[in-house]
Length: 343
Image (cartoon, rainbow, N blue to C red; front, side, top):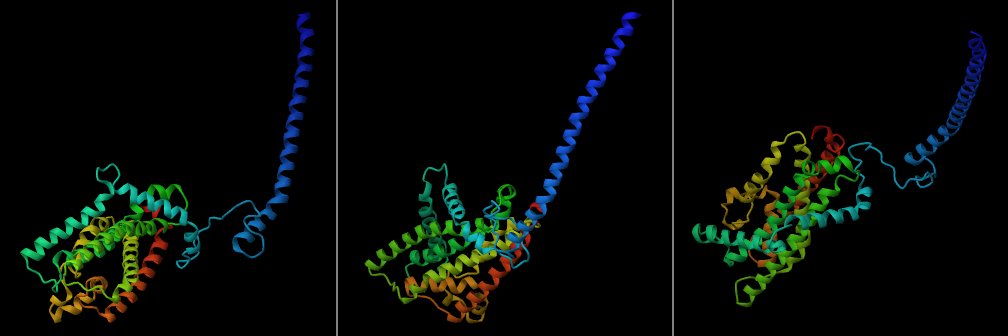
């Protein structure tokens, strides 16, 4: 009993000392917390004012002064296309172009040779089926050159359309992880398809020179100067219609299945396998409602010297192109803000 009485005061003294130490630690933590809150309260309003001024461009303070190279902010309206940001993404676009061009024939035996084989086989098929069997007119031009001229320019448009139409569905994983201008991928598709077009155009020009050397009825003329403009219009239509379909496929997946099939049907409504002169007059205006028709005819006339060039039709195609691009950009700009919730 005596030993228990002696130990009891010692334990009470130890508990008192422990409580004193713990209380001191808690007081210091509380003081540090109050100091941190006070410092945060002193600095936060200033930092917020600086950041707001930099984002809204209401003062000379820039994001570089705050330690950032750029500020990610939501689009303010449908017309906020942020084309400056797209221009600054040109290095990224070049990487996408290289990716698209290399990935198409990756792990194939012939590789880029397919860029030459495809138009040759397509042209040969058209020559046999529509030229020899069906006996369609070619305006006195060599059949192979006639069909290849239409195939080269149409293939570029068709590839641009089908490639950009699949933008959101094919790149949903990339869009969900990395922030960059959403139009960078459709633009890179149009540029990468231009590489294929250049290869096929070189093949077409080589065949044209061969036929001209053997005395064929081909007469290149000054309309060749419009070739870059015609190509730009084809790229614009491929991009415009493609991003419209891409924006709509985020909600209506059936459109993704109809694009390739629709492009094939569209080709038969375009003078690719037949000349405009072979169409009866009462149906010619209907064919000219297709904005691609005048472009294909002008392209063929510039290189081969035969066909029907409609200046009014080209002006109509240029005007409709502006409407298609504006509609596509606005629709794409609207859908890109919420498409990750619906894909």
